[in-house]
Length: 245
Image (cartoon, rainbow, N blue to C red; front, side):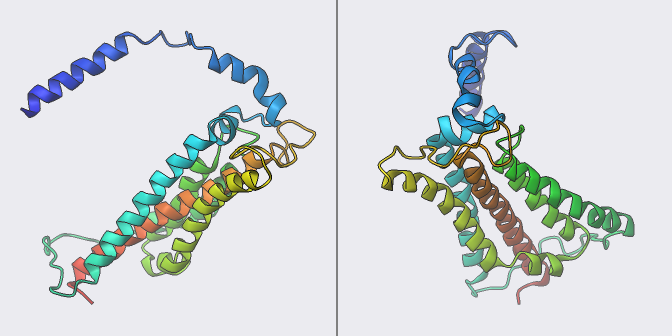
């Protein structure tokens, strides 16, 4: 039954691909229309960010809350498992060979931590000027903290991303995005309407109004969500390895 269903799915998928236009031959009207008006309407030269955070901002809210829900669900399930207390977790691979982190890995990871933070912050705060944005910047920011764990410093990783703070930052990022849209409603404008000053120079850091603000909130939420997921998984792994606390 599985293979029959899989074959049907593949056939349907291939049928859909056959109807796509050739690469570089986009037939739809929306792309060229957006390119003609986006910079003038938003003062953002990062047109992809203008599409994500303004023209289809309502869809982006849903995408962000998918990640928010996934991170919250992971945390709830793993914390509940750790709190059951009925039996101690058992390491099913007690004979595993887990050598300590080598000096080469530790050195490279720590050397890259600072530059990765800078790149992640730049990506999250310059969505209006370049092909970047909060989603990309948030992932890169989270990677900077994970590099500390790869350097063999899990305790430092835990101190730099305490669970309570990570939870609060994730909620603030997701809530901040929604709040930008609600603020527009309170002033009688459509949800997520770009009501902040757009600036005078296209592509400037201070340009694009709410686009830059939304990207910042998205960066916070994405970084905190990935940190929360990784932290919970690491806690669960250590708990199983040591057979409880």
